[in-house]
Length: 248
Image (cartoon, rainbow, N blue to C red; front, side, top):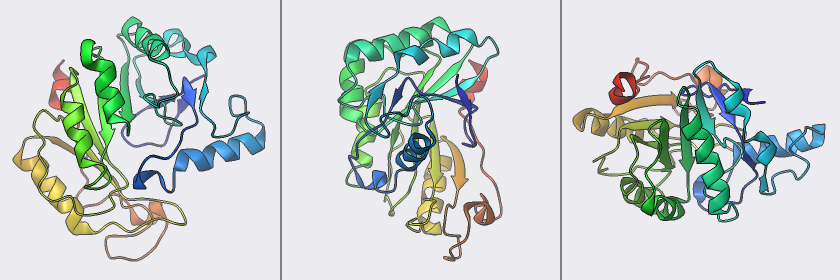
């Protein structure tokens, strides 16, 4: 079955693929890897291979059986566009998405080149939001241009963990930006001015902004639990979602 989640910007997770490999600095302290090893140790079904990339075709039909409209984060425990996932299997995932228009699917990848390759001759279903991770300048920012080539109703950026100041960021044809700091015992700190610059860019370019968390370091530079550091940015919470998603 699909799973409820504590991720603030979605409702449930759906993992037709599990496991992954690291491709950039944002992967260094991967929460999914830690969770997969924990589930493997517990003997959880579907994690017999730990964090080794594994296709899970028996999970493909899970959203079909759910009639209540639901927002799904697809592959919270993997990357759908991993090089080890064949395009014909990705076709099967998107077939389910097309057959369940009552649901909204949020698909996030660090493999933006393969994302663009897949969608070169395919439109994304209107109920699929397509996003890329942007953790830094060298690896993250180039993914945005690849995302812009995808014919998607909603394009979004997950700027988490934000590892450095991004400079001027072009948000043309981007609908939503999520920002968050890293959590966990080895979390790298995020500076308030990095977040503030992105929030201002979103405001200036009319892009919805969602501040997810400070993570393991507070805005004051003090290490605390993620819960203690909270989600306030300059005394406010930002929970914006794309208006086109509300009105479509």
